[in-house]
Amino acid sequence: MHSYWATSVILLLLSSVSSASDVNRPIAVSFSGQRSPSPIDGRLLLMISKDDSTEPRFQISAGPSGQLIFGQDVHALQPESQVIFDGTILGFPLPSLDAVPPGEYWVQALLHRYQTFQRGDGHTVKLPMDRGEGQQWNRAPGNLYSLPQRLRIGSGKGPMVHILLDQEIPPIQPPADTRYIKHIKMQSKLLTEFWGRPMHLGACVLLPHGFDEHPDARYPLMVNHGHFPHTFDGFRETPPDPDLPPVFSKRFKLPAYNRIVQQQAHEFYKTWIGPDMPRVIIVMIQHANPYYDDSYAVNSQNLGPYGDAIMHELIPLIEKKFRAIGAGWARFTYGGSTGGWEALAAQIFYPDEFNGCFAACPDPIDFRAYTVVDIYQDENAYYRQGQWS
Image 1: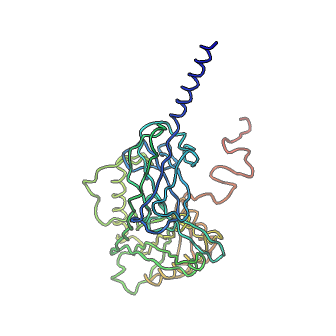
Image 2: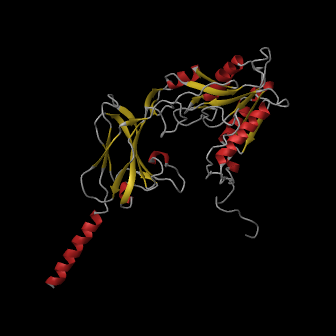
Image 3: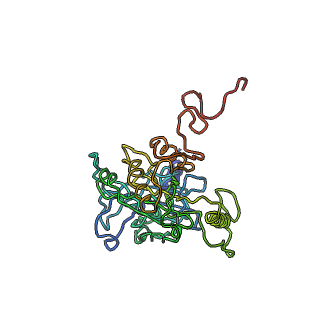
C-alpha cells in the first residue's frame, strides 16, 4: 500500500515537471531613450518563425506559409519600460505563446507607431498614419524593431527573455520624375478638416508622347484606381535586363516572372510612344490613409470625404497642371479587383464626371452576388443545390 502511494506521488511529480517544461518563458520588449526620448503610442508586435531566409516581419501572412505573430496595444509607452508577452497575449495563427511547440525559433519585435487624431466629427482616435509606404506596418518609416535573434521557445527554464527595439525603419525616398512619369502631392482641405491634421492626396501621372513638343495640346484623362502605387508601375523605357536572375512567382506559378514583368513594361512603353496610340494622360491615384492603403475612393463617415477630395480637389489640380481637357466627356475610369470596385463607385457617384468605366473582376458590389453567393437566397455558402442533387 505504501509502495503504491509512493509510486503515485513520484508519477504525479514527474507529470508536473513535464507539463511545466512546456510552458514558455515570458518575453519582455522595450526601447531605449536614445532611440526615442518621448513615449510612444502604437501596436507592439512579436513575430516567431522557423524560416531564416528573411526577417520574420516579412513572413507574416494569412497563407499556409505565414509565420507566428502576437500583438498588443501600448499607450504612452515610456523609454526603458518593458512590455511583457506571455500566454495571455493573443496571437495568430496560434492563440498564444503557450501553444508554440518547444524548439529553436527566429524571434523579432516591432513597434508600429500610432498618432492621435482629433477629428472634425468630434471623435479622438489613435491610428497609424501612412508614411509613404502604403500602409505596410513592416516597412513603415519611423517604426522601431529588433534584429532577428535565435531563441529557444518552450523550455520554461532560465530568466525572462529581453528584446530591445534598437533599429528604426528609415524614411522612404520619393521616386524621381522622368520625361513621361510625374509625381504630384497636395494637401486636401476637405480631408484636413475631417481628420484635424494636414492630410494629403497624391498621384502618379503618365504623360503622353510628345507632351513637351506640343505645349498647346490638351488631353483626355484616364483615372486608374486601386491599391497604393509608389510610382507608375508597368512602364519601362529601357529593354529588359538580360542579366536579371529569374525569380519564380508563387502567386502566378510562373518561372522567371520578374523577367516577364520587365518585358511587358518595355512593350507598353513602345506601344505608348507608337504612332497608333491615342494621346491621353493616365493617372494612378494615391489615397493611403490611417486605415488602409486606399480609401475605396468614396465618401465615408468612418474615413472622411475621400470621394469628393479626389474628384473636386486632386483631379482638377492634375488637369490644370498637365493640360487635360477637364470635362466629363473627356474622362474615363478603370481598375481591377478593389480598383474595379472603386472605378464603378466613381462612375456611379459622379455620373457626370466620367464618360465611361472599365471594371475588371471588381470586389463584390451586391450581396446578391457576393463572389458566388447570394446571401439573401442561398441556403449555404458551400455548394449549389440542383433539382436532383
